[in-house]
Length: 147
Ligand code: HEC
Image (cartoon, rainbow, N blue to C red; front, side, top):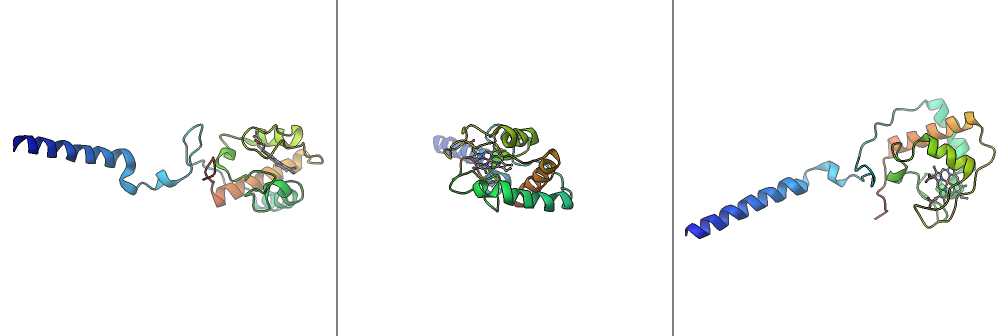
């Protein structure tokens, strides 16, 4: 009897530990995609200037959407800019500027290299990044690697 009580006591404790460790199903943040580097799920992206966003949208459609998708969610030849790895902590605005000016050697995906994109002035880049961050803020991020 005493053994049984001890055994029952241990299993109650184990179940309790399991609920704490795995969130018991009611922890909403466990379902959100996490940055693979920092583990973060939230990025506090500020609301962007709507004029810059609108101008940036046109530039994005003309220069980036053929590979990254009109909705930023990627195509057969380029990755989604809503992937969690493109959050502002992991790929800051400077990483975006470098991608445009220098191109990118394939390292996160199997789409091949990104060539430099000509004809984007500094002012255009400010518009472009406002559009991308606004979409990330409003649409949220996708898991990396994709499920
Ligand atoms: C010809 C196709 C193509 C076009 C056009 C293109 N990209 Fe890319 N881009 C890619 C591919 C492919 C990758 C993925 C490289 C990898 O495997 O990490 C990429 C990656 C990136 C990255 C990630 C850079 C890094 O440091 O990992 C950024 C930022 C980016 N693109 C921004 C842009 C922007 C902004 C535009 C428009 C001005 C654009 N791209 C246009 C194909 C393209």
